[in-house]
Image 1 (cartoon, rainbow, N blue to C red):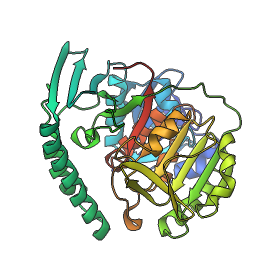
Image 2: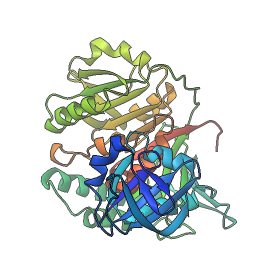
Image 3: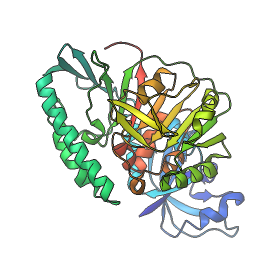
Image 4: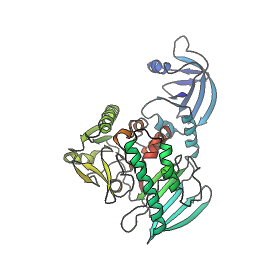
Length: 405
């Protein structure tokens, strides 16, 4: 059953009354009914209060009697990110429980997975400071090839179904991939939830990275895929947003139009069809955020985007980019190519998918941008994944780290 989520200011909780300022009263009152439960978030007090309406509005029509149900501790950062664009949302009740779990586990140390090559062997070191775990396993190329073939074969089966089925049962199609990845001899199980997992990847001598679908193996964890590199400081200038889209894809045209309409009030927007974008690539020098809706592909082991009939594994002129979103096929299968080059050019975060994303099953990033905090793309990704798990199932979050493993 839906629940109304409110930020302090759009409504004010005073003792046993929920007072709604006149300017926001009508749209909120339409969502409220007798005995409805409301989650009220106050970033100053760092708290979330669950209350229950016990009656209708007072004579002025903007005050409701409520009774307290429960109060939760909630960080100001989570509250500000959740409500960064809208002061009121309707979510399912279970979302409040997920937010509470997120808040409770955010300060816990991350589980570390370190993937590094040593000649023909891949070493996997896992650490969990919370449980004082430190173990290392080494895969020979033969063992790794067997595991990789099984994972990649399963990945191809998923992609084939996605191409033909516009509304698949995602839990069913991901289950074989989950089983294949479960062959990893990890000292913890896939039952863990709401923990941070930092997956550090080192390439082999040929620049190739191993692929492990940790987002599928641990669907309720918060996973960052880290590759070696440097991170430049981010200069907050003008919140410039560049969108590039394919005119061949119905979803790309539709989503780009929706994003332009949704973001135009908050960002300096530039949008280009991909078949003309080469003429305007120097615009990326000023872009803080980049969103691509178009064709992607792994070509010669490198993630590439299609521009004007030609495949490219890099974008020039990237100088002050906070986030790049690649809503296209396969580019998140490996950091090699577009992901790695964006991060090397100074982008702080890249969101990309290892899967094929056919036009009729493409993910709508409008959901993501509804809770998008420009200052904290990573937390925005986490909260959006709690709202819609399809985001983290289909897309991986990449960033980089300075030190070597």
